[in-house]
Length: 132
Ligand SMILES: Nc1nc2c([nH]c(=O)n2[C@@H]2O[C@H](COP(=O)(O)OP(=O)(O)OP(=O)(O)O)[C@@H](O)[C@H]2O)c(=O)[nH]1
Image 1 (cartoon, rainbow, N blue to C red):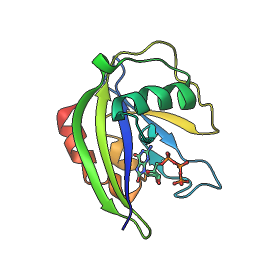
Image 2: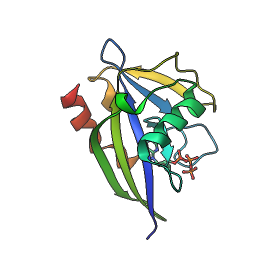
Image 3: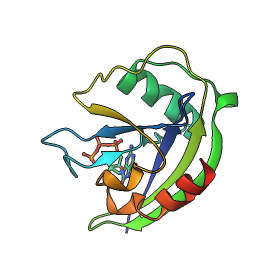
Image 4: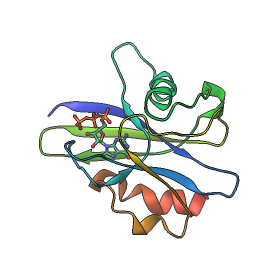
């Protein structure tokens, strides 16, 4: 099966809440809440991919030094296997504004389980909650 590398990040605000983005209608897994991020392109590091995706999806800027690895997801979907490192980030420039039709939500640690997420994300939620 094809292995797909996706870099994702939990942006944490000063109140310890996490940014989630709801996938828009028409995309795979529409309506589910996910961490910002996306596929790592050929020749790109996961950190560079995240910096690019945060700029493209949310119009914020961050830096490699502000991206700390936390955990990862490894999950088989029907047509590919997802390997998704999850970083945490507390420092960025700008205010996240959806650029691709997503809906954003800041979730407290306690509320995270109320947001339906892709199956790959489910095992990483308790890890993130314990870390927060
Ligand atoms: N960014 C992100 N992607 C996730 C998460 N969980 C998860 O299964 N994914 C999957 O990882 C892939 C991310 O790809 P992407 O964001 O670059 O691409 P996309 O949605 O435009 O592509 P797609 O429509 O081909 O799935 C998608 O298949 C998405 O469903 C998550 O928490 N964050």
